[in-house]
Length: 155
Image (cartoon, rainbow, N blue to C red; front, side):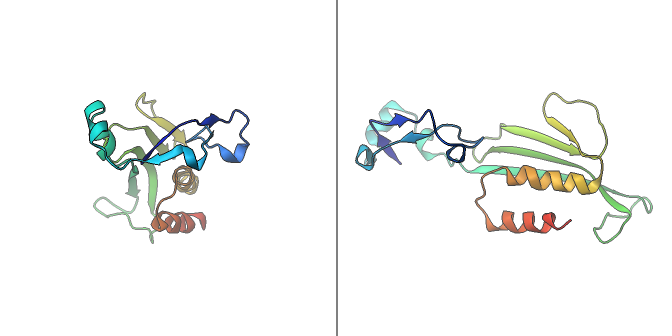
């Protein structure tokens, strides 16, 4: 963590320098960046939670399935009768349970819900592909995430 001074905002940043998660570009000369060595003076001005909170982005999801064989059968991927009909996702900061975004992927039209974005996918395959695309749009910090995306991509 550090302090910057004399930065310049780049109004004409090329498309690859921007993303939906960070649409602004700043230029700072390395000499204008000073690492913070002693946080004590800053604690008197700003709350300590500003410096101690982990800003990791978290994606949680719940996959809803059913099995048309008969009541009581737990859906398993190897059975063609088992289907995914909904995936609910929530994106939030690690230390803040308030969602930044809530997404519900469904196979058929469903009632609107003002708390979340509903995406109607039409079938199980499109639903799983939409899940992969939503996941892929987040910053990747884990090789596990990339492995799962690769597996879903083969559908």
